[in-house]
Every structure is written in C-alpha cells, then in structure tokens.
Image (cartoon, rainbow, N blue to C red; front, side, top):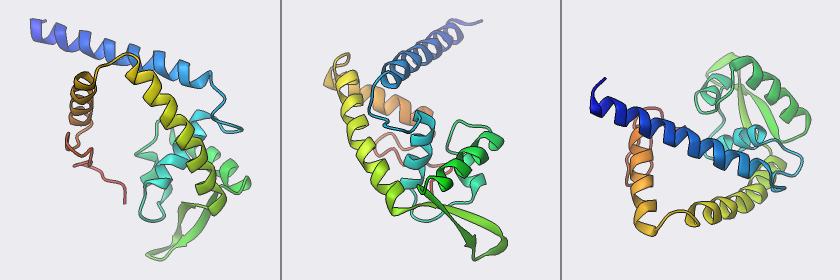
Length: 156
C-alpha cells in the first residue's frame, strides 16, 4: 500500500473512532426523551424535507436497513409523530411526513442536541479546525463544502 493509501486509512479510522466516541457521549444524555437516537434521526431527516417522502427516499438518508426502517416508521406512526399519505403520483405508494407533534418533538430535542454537539466539538477544536473539519466532511459527503448542499442526492 502506498503512503497516501496508509494515510487515507489512518484518517478513516480516526473519523470512525471520533464518530463512535461522540455518539456514545451523546447517547448517554437525556436529551432524547422517550425517543432513541435512531428515531430522532428519522424525525430530523423528515424535518429537512420540503415535502413528504416515500420510504425508499427516506431510506437513502438514514443508517437503517429497509425492514428496520419500516418497523420504526410503523412505531412512529402509532405514536403520532409521523403520518402516511397517499402518493398523488402513484396510487399504490405512500408518502411520509412529520405530524405537528412530530415536528414539535424534533425541534425540542434538536435544540438540546445542537447545543450538546456544539459543546462537545468546540471543547476539542479551534475555530479554524472547525472550518477545516466542516469543509472536509461535506466534501467527503459529496456536498458543496461551503454550504453542505448535497450534489448527488438532495432531500426533496
């Protein structure tokens, strides 16, 4: 393996280790109320959308298998946080969106989680390092580093 390849793997391992450390730190807090972090992720993803999504579209933006996501959506619908509606373009299809209660829950948790993320990350990184990290991560995500706008698969 080349030096560049070894460096790439070292950087990747560092990124995954940082992610695991921070996710454990965030999971150990009480900001999630009665939601799991994965349930919050689904609510957050739907909150970023300009309209309802089919489950396949939602699946592209969360780290869950299709069957696990389907079961989670069922639970979130039962709890009144997500609603299903007919897809006007395809009578067999269903679209998912947040209910008012789901939007309120996402915003409340989101404010606390954003503060938690800001505290954790700013405790470790300088302002310049934060700018570099944002640019690198958005670039690796296939998005415009200056805006975070996804070039490949934007949320509708």
